[in-house]
Image 1 (cartoon, rainbow, N blue to C red):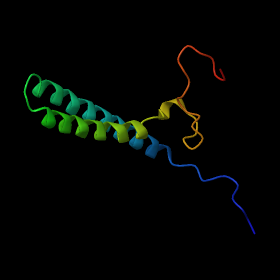
Image 2 (image 1 turned 180 degrees about the horizontal axis):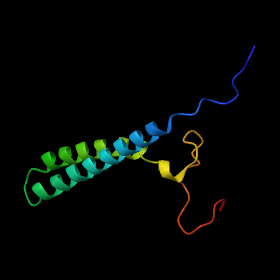
Image 3 (image 1 turned 180 degrees about the vertical axis):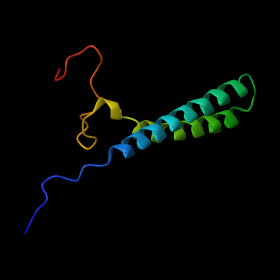
Length: 93
């Protein structure tokens, strides 16, 4: 009986699709929040502004979760070793 010790690697193209979708959701969420902040600035309809901002946050969060790992940085998505280093600091610190 053969046992697979490692999971099959995902195709690289799907990493870019996932990353692009995440970035799209992030930008869309930020734009919705910006429009809500500017459109309702100084008006008495606070509830409407907060609802629209909630929609922006609910768009942004899944995008952030999808785009946490930059595919160009390399590394494996399942282990979280890609794109998590702090700029200017050596790896492992």
